[in-house]
Length: 225
Image (spheres, one colour):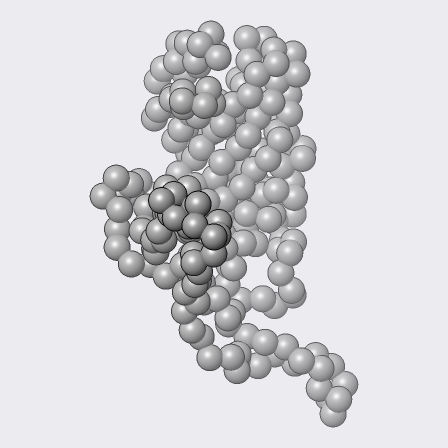
């Protein structure tokens, strides 16, 4: 990993925003949008890298990143992230653009992996397509477009892939209503499916954790029975 890290820093010194090695041994590079294609081509073709495979491509919405939502008797830093938003965790205040596209690459030749991240703002949700670099990016980019609204310029057929025809909005945005925008039903009189405003009242779901059973008993009481 150290060799890959040094090679990345030397080769793309003027083209990366950052190149970091995590405590878990994973390398992530952040690439400005204008340099994405040239960096990806070099990562695929140059012998020192040879990332022949795009394992995954996904969109990320950092809108509420770092929010402390709810705590339990034994709260953790990793879990309990789907409750109601309460306060902002000062350890993770987000100052970068709201959206990102993340690419996970694999090199069979050199037995190494790499994460590439490209940020894009709400006002400019356009990123160059890499379908002609890694063909499997086709459906991945359509999925990110469908769920996050990120447009991939140069994509040969950028259509929704998971949501229904005529769907309004992008479901994985963190400001998208949990109940959706519209609902559909079959109208027997019209002999077709019709769309209508949602009839479900939106509410906040707050998980309830019960910790009075034996699994969460205090150590001093563990012998009582």
